[in-house]
Image 1 (tube, one colour):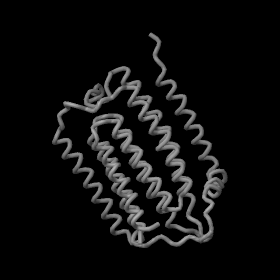
Image 2: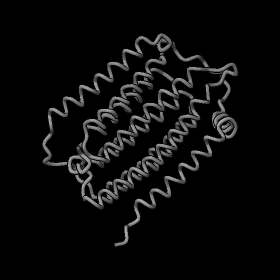
Image 3: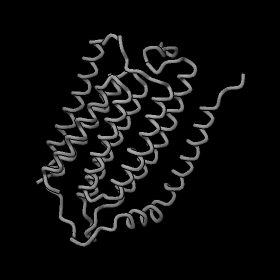
Length: 106
Length: 167
């Protein structure tokens, strides 16, 4: 049978993949995609806990699913703003590579 | 859900999630991300969270991915060619990621509740759209309105950011 731990392990590995993407890739668009992977890994563990905690009414705990709904909304807004910043940056510098954007480097 | 289906969708999510990071071509990364999100939506469905699964497909596999692909094609981003891989950075990044993974797995291993299976639900249909809606407009009404304001602010910000500066 599938346990809660299996879902948590999948969620943890997915989060690590997203984290590695943010650490390793230098392309801003791939970094934004990796951020989405990390947010979705958090969503998966929230939904798994929601299904695990069945209340006295015999239904899953819907508070976690409302929280996931909020995360999805905020993530969509974040992608829109992030891509707008990317377009503005590309207009100014003609690149999306982080190695070429180092004006603020100490 | 049968364990076989769970592992199929979990592997689909993880393999295509890794493909997002590994691919050099941004378009291939974006398409891998779609497949990864579809696998994740199937996992949500397997947890009886049908509404969240549908939202996942509509918002992520639909809207967000169209936005990503649109920007990639608009900026005409090519695969990064000729850029030399910095092996020290690669090794350090992989090491930090693997340490994180080890910590997460060890925490889950020591978490006693994680070894239990999911409690059964009653056989009647689960009306989860109604239940989430009741929670959203009842208990979580104020956060819901704040999120509405946030989306409005994001819209205004995006319009401002993409407006061309008059010279």
